[in-house]
Each structure stands twice: as structure tokens, then as C-alpha cells.
Image 1 (tube, one colour):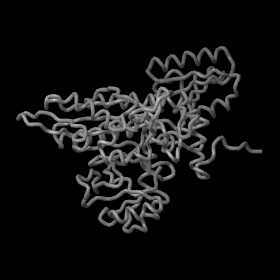
Image 2 (cartoon, helix red, strand yellow; image 1 turned 90 degrees about the vertical axis):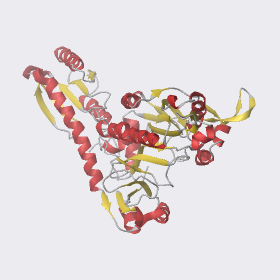
Image 3 (cartoon, one colour; image 1 turned 180 degrees about the vertical axis):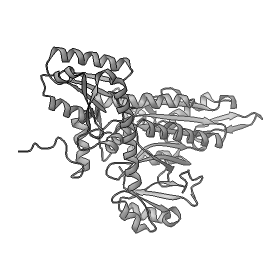
Image 4 (tube, helix red, strand yellow; image 1 turned 90 degrees about the horizontal axis):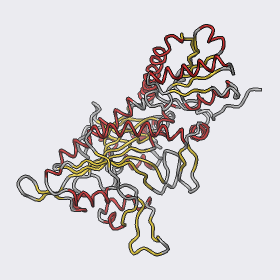
Length: 470
């Protein structure tokens, strides 16, 4: 009698498969309050890798890390009308603290434009203080009606950048720099996810922004996931919070601000973009553990050689874990490491030791091959590079194959059942966008035919990327 599969097959039920992977790969659990999550050590180690790389890129772009309060006076949000209206359904508000009713309710941080704007106004006096480039790593709370671990939770982790500039052009260029040089390159080169960057429609843009730019990725079932956004805020928040500076001519001017962020949603995107019916597949550049060394049997010589092999890999700056839990069956251990998506497994038994080889197992492709122990660093390095390239190529092929050009709203709705549709924005327009929304299809972003960003809301000549989304 055949054993039941460890995971629900993707083709049977993709959402159930996702939940199975999150649980069985020990990524996360649901928290005790509806919509919250507990990120388990393995899931958090992946987030730490993401965080470290994105943080390095943000600092290279000139921003500095700071920290602002979790609690924000309710009046702050009310000072930018569009902003508070956009977030009102998601707000968690504290009205009682220390056993007493608060004179003014405080909002649990949904995002920090308002509180950071308050302090930017204190810190900016002159054009010499600009640009002011800030970033914070924090948790935020947005009360989620339809939660799903990593994708939509009432509390999640993220970074949020906030900047102030002396001109609209300077703010625009910086927001685009973050979009391309930080987010797009990280997602492509580290996560191996080929995102499409574009401009959000007026309906979809961030509350209070004058322009929202986005990175959109196609998941394994053809749906879209917004992986990160960068916003031009114009002077809306500067006027609401009185962020002014004295220019070189001695005239008071309002600053131009931006905000931008990515979150633990990227972990969910990683799972759904690269995972297969055996579990996760982690791109080697990102993987907290790139190689696992497994002792096949409880043999002193084998275990000793496995330890030496793990040390050799670590000395070569390869992230490695040693598995000598021979009291657990080899099959069970191999399945567990496959579930976790470790890019390379090295399996060593008595016969391998005698022959001077080790069995190298590729998580991407599943190929097993004997390789010489004497040249193991080169073999592993080559395997890791091949896996990174293969995952990006596979995701790119999926996206391109499942994106079709259409001419009508009806064709766009039909194409969105299995992937993405590309339709001229002039054909779709605001009315077409509203019509598609009735069937759960959204305009993910607007792009120019050459892949560049539209430079205005009119988006003349632009194409709309249309899809169902998470």
C-alpha cells in the first residue's frame, strides 16, 4: 500500500499545499489571537537572511536606521485625511491603559508616516538638513479580516523607509532608486524571483501618496503577489506635519517626502514561487543552510568524516549543518531536509567513505550523483550556483508563459483565471478596472511597453498587468 504524500499536491489544492508547507517545514504557527503568527526558528532564520541583505542595500543607498514608537496619537493620523480614511478599517486603537480611560486614544502603528513626519518637522530647518533618509525595522498592526500566515497577518514584521527632500525630482529619483536598486535587484538576485516593476493605478495606490510603485511577482498557481512598494508622497505629509526648510534663497519651503517598505510577506512569496510537491526550495544565496551533511549509518569513521567535511565547508564560507542523527531513519531525515528546501545534501556512508566519494543530492531537479571528497568545495559551489540560476530561470519561464496579451476586458478576465493578462490601459481604463474588480481581478500595475515606469497617472501608452492576487 502506497504511503500518503507528506504534502497536499499543488495541483489538488494550492492554498492547502501552502499551509502544509508552512506547518511541516516548521516555518510558522498561527498565534493565539486571530490573524497573528508565531514565526518558528527556521522561518525566522530565512527572514533574518532577507533582513540582513535588504538592510545592507538600504544603507548603501544612504539611509540610516532609527526607531519610532509603536503607539501613535490618534490625532496624528487625522491630520492627513486621505491617510486615515485609507487605514481606518485596519486600525487597532487603545482606549484604556493602566486601568484608566485615555484622554486621547492611541493607534497601534499601522505604518509610521505620521509619527515620523512629526519628528522630521523638528529635525529639518534648512536645505542643508536635506535629504533626510531614515529607515526602521519594526512590527506593524493592520487588523486583517482574511488572515493567512506570512501573506496577510494582523501583525507582521517589515522595514519602512521615510525620506524628506528639497525637490519633487529628488524625491522621485530616490523612491525609484529604492524600487530598482534595493527591492528589484534583491528579489531577482537573492530570492530568484523575477518581479515586474510598475506604477499602481490611482485606485490601488497608498493612502496619501501621489504615486505608488510596486514589485509584483507571479506565484506557482499564476496569481500575483505584491512583494514591495515605494511611494512618492508629494508634499501631502509635509503640509500636514509642517515639514519646512529654509532654501538657499532664504525662502520657507515644504519638503517632498517618500516612504517604502518590504515585509515578512516576502517569505510567503518565496514559498509560493519556488516550492514544489516535496516542500520548500530555497535559493542558495538566501538559504540559512546551503548544505546539509548526513551520516547514512551509525559508524564512527563515517561520523568523524562527516564532521570533518562540515568543517571544511564552513571554512570555505558555505553555510552548513551536520546531521548525524542516525537513530532516525535516513529516509525520514532526507524527507525533512527536502521539506525545508536545503539546496544541497551530502550523504556519506561506509561504502562512500571506502571509495572516497560522497553522494551529492540537488534539491532543484532532484539529481543524485557521486562526487569526489577531494574536490568537494568546487562541486558544492558549482551545485549552489546552478540551483540559484535554475530557480530564477524556472520562475521567469512560468511568468512569461502565463502572461498573455489581450485586447478586451472579457479576454483579460478569462486570462486572469490561470495567469496574468496584459491589456492597453487606454482600452481598460477606470471603468474596466472597476468591472474586473467585481470578479476579483485587479490591475496589479501599469508598465510602458519597454518595461519602464509610466511618468503620470494618465499613463498614456501604458499596459495594465491584470491578475487575481493574494
